[in-house]
Image 1: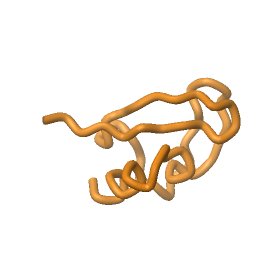
Image 2: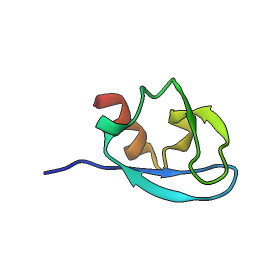
Image 3: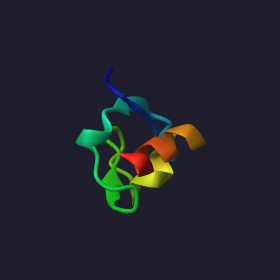
Length: 57
């Protein structure tokens, strides 16, 4: 079963999902594919569950 993390840009509102294997560590800088906002990846986690999935994998 493939695990996905749901992401939401706090600046432009773009929502999408990615496999945790395709993402950097939660504390690393991540760039929104919609508006290119730069923040820690953990700030893009849509829910607390998504954040915990990022940290676990």
